[in-house]
Image (tube, rainbow over the protein chains, first blue to last red):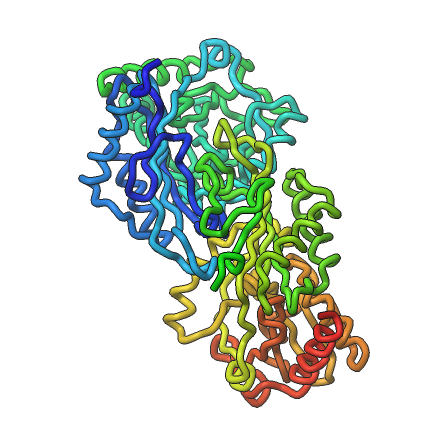
Length: 280
Length: 280
């Protein structure tokens, strides 16, 4: 590999080799876990649905009282410069904005903007064919509509997921289902209606596109989903930028439908793949 | 100043000048706000109540599935080496343990241990004489008994505190009072009983010592404190490592007692100062 294939990142105003991308320990992410981020997919050099991700990123920053140090145009220019430098055929790009270097270790400083691009592997055929088994946990994220960097609960639950032989954990509050730590959740009802939780969830970009795609064929509802609704559902699936759509075939001890990935789920996945291919 | 007076920090196994204390952006504190910490006071080269703080630090680490890379003895040796290098007459020392450099940006790696020492100024006489005005906010920390680095809510509320001309924010859940973002809370009832919330609070080291000191003279209760109890209280105060004891004279629109720092509060502060002087 030539040196130009070394990965680069953007850190506080400068493009540097990724292995030299560091933050001072006074940064408010390290001191107080304070920051927001977004994560998008780049296929063949094209960032997919860039406008959607940037709109959410700037909205998250505002909600956490953080000023993005670059205009949307300047941020786009930087994103495209990194993509050109890194030359990855399939990549994830993480844009992080922290509370910055803080003299007091508590008050917000000049926010630190980071952009990190790394190779991305999409889930394989095997996972799509078997579907996921998930456990549930009573928890609502602190600022659920904002993409903060706070994943303490999700990471603390990694061991519990493994111990249960599960793939992920679905959050609910007293039986009212919300989301996974990093994915949105959908069910398909016996009557074919596609439902996804409306309250206390991150508005996923993939969630948004799946809602649009589903609306062409099915009745679509953004509304309450309870653990009991899951018991009655004929299909269930999750959505995310990196996972696209993955079938969920078991929630705790409840087998969904016939325990196999459902027809609606798989047809929506095909629609999503086509949408992404048109975009890329 | 000679170069030996330059502040040093401990970062992932090495003592380095503080201005060269950096973490790679793959660290799980930056990626996911994942970490724990503790904070102790050093007076004339002596860390006060070191055993208490280290016990809590190791307990926090365990609760978050993080292995401290140093034994308690090795950690103490490092703390004393830093104290000797930094030669600060009055200092705060922060010990942070994060989820470490993470390849996936989600799974825990080899935890990063940081120790940062900086000059500390205790609150002045003026603040002690006027007492604090605080606002309230309905919120319980996610893992309240663990000292995690997650202060998203506290930092988001800084503006609200300022807008209300207040000094701090007191958390409660549906009227049941817990703590401040960085301090514990006490009231003194009309009958002289000293009460501090027992549930969903960080077990402060200063809180512990104040409970012991108060128990010598007053009836002391660790139990429920409601917003209504505050209305009826004759005194209120907060405790923390950096603030020791500060009187609270107003909570939202409620003036506590006669609106001036109370006699019990000020006598406990004198007891605490004496305890710290014996320890230092």
